[in-house]
Length: 154
Image (cartoon, rainbow, N blue to C red; front, side, top):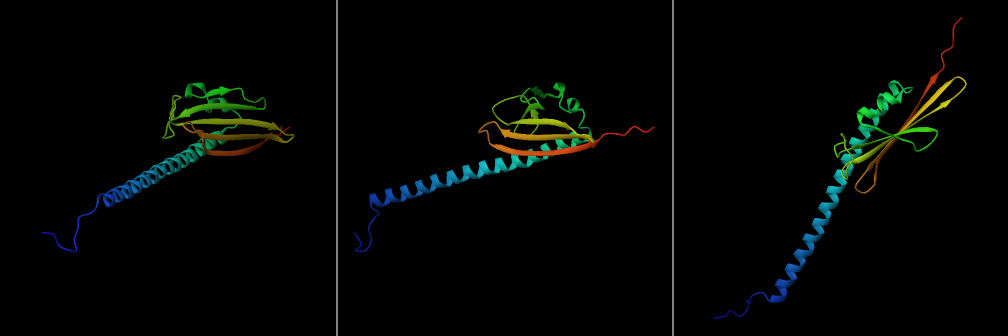
């Protein structure tokens, strides 16, 4: 016995519903992957900025001796990039903890230079943090400190 107004869904209607849900699922997966990537990048930028500020504050305590702060015993590698500056490299993991060089995490580069003036010396530092996976810039921070020469009192 069939009722006059009722019929079962046709195969085409079921295929269309499945197709609609599949497309919706694909779009949602892409949105979640993009959101996860944005979250990781935001976390890396925050932690990178904290690390860069910390390195700069430690350097500001004594900018005349960067070898102590960026020593090989602490994992830093001195690179001869430019004549006018001293460059140091180190790797960090995704949590911005210093680590062995690898694919995950980031590379931290510190450039230090100094300029002699008649009344003192201008010390300059630039900290650059780049993500290893896609070579995206996480943060770049620079500052300078001027130290006047001490006058000899007679």
